[in-house]
Image 1 (tube, rainbow, N blue to C red):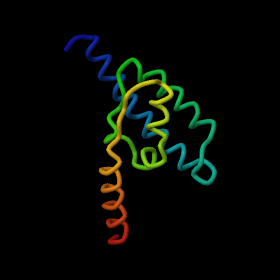
Image 2 (cartoon, rainbow, N blue to C red):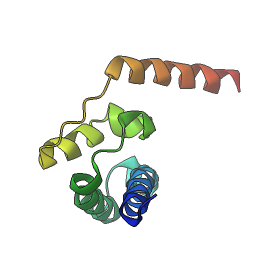
Image 3 (spheres, helix red, strand yellow):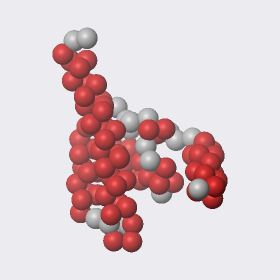
Length: 102
């Protein structure tokens, strides 16, 4: 693997981590809304996405997809990042069923 390929892999992993961090930051924000920390993470996501492409939606936390955060960020960048909301809804239903069982 070339140094460039390694760098791209690291940047893609960092981008995926930023999406997880954004979900965590939003959960920690007052009433699960938005915070300055969320804004900072979105800016970092916006900086990396054009360089390495969008993180696949299936790797992004469900609330960020359901609330349209993922879609909004990519729309603001002018980057195509379609989401299969039918599959998102199926996964949400699965998670909800698991929560009832636990």
